[in-house]
Image (cartoon, rainbow, N blue to C red; front, top):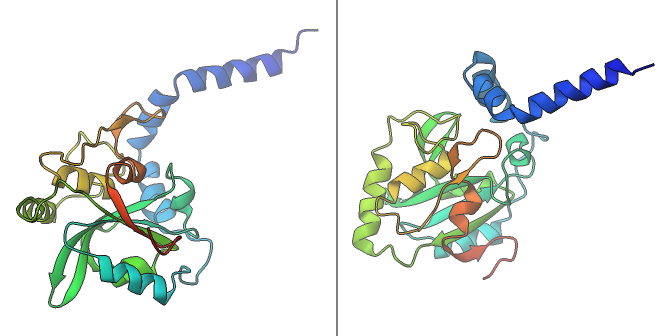
Length: 216
């Protein structure tokens, strides 16, 4: 007797795998996908407590932080951490001191925001600070100005560098108007779209501080 049920299931799985990009792109156009991205993936954490950052690590990083530095963070208790490929899961751009407070620009589910470095660090399990040697002071000012021009941009739940929305990595990538970082977007195996991951950015900067090691 021919096992039709297993054969049919195997064929269905094979077809879905072959056309997985089309299926995912169709899913991304639905309200269900938007709900999952905004209210589940971006918000769920496996603990209600704060992340495990310590004061010595924060203080050491804060002493090194300068305008134009790129901050890479990771929250081991967030659901999104387990879905983002690579070691780093979020990126912020230091835009300098505002009213005596070192501020960073970021894109989250709440769209563009400017938060203190303290908030960014204390909501993380670990963070790295990176700098681009090719960003001189004049160019850094240009990058920051471009970054702050995205205040009205929407959060990019599709993570597509070619649309008009921005996610955290795209905010930095598109602010680097001359691409002095030398970042080359890669194609997501899931959808085939061009994306920039936190690790893409991290591999193109000099890491001057790693809170896991406390010194570089």
